[in-house]
Image 1 (cartoon, rainbow, N blue to C red):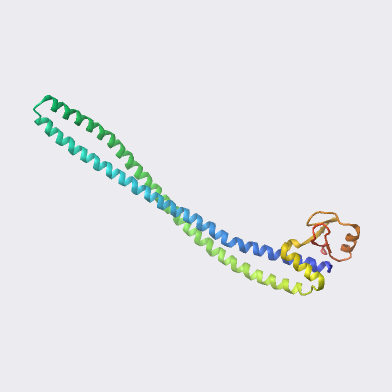
Image 2 (spheres, rainbow, N blue to C red):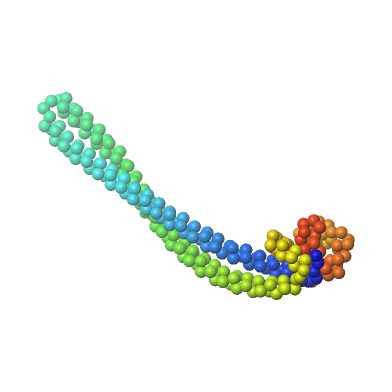
Length: 235
């Protein structure tokens, strides 16, 4: 199979342009997906922080309620202690009051820690909401820019495809069938430029006879990798 080197060189250039444009188009949804994932993570952080804040508030309320209930018991026990007629009953109530008073001291410290934690979580929530707002704006910006870029790339790809179709109309016979088979499996890697005395695709040395054919403006099939090899006509 053979064809003029300028045509193969042109086909190689256009196929590379086509592959590059397709690759850029394939990256478009990935860029949007990354931005949307980051936004979702920021929104999830807000939700988790809100849940943490709610739990801390509930814990604080429960401990405060527990403290009030214990204070009421202490008040009642003091009344009973004052009315106690036996020393044993008096001492038992006194010990219970002392134990519950100490328990309330510990509970008071726990409540203070929870209130400080609530303040810290509140600040964290504000930061998370600000971050999510920024991520939302960034996501909208990226979606808009990517959509504009996608339209440009699709228009350019249509132009390149038209140019490729016109170039491929110059192919015929066995070479056309072999070219189509190679491009279907290797895409733009189906062709390679001569580099020194080697195939630019697999770097294998070519025989003097094949080099001679390349220098006369023909293209050849690399015996090693099967790529269509051509000599750059612009050098």
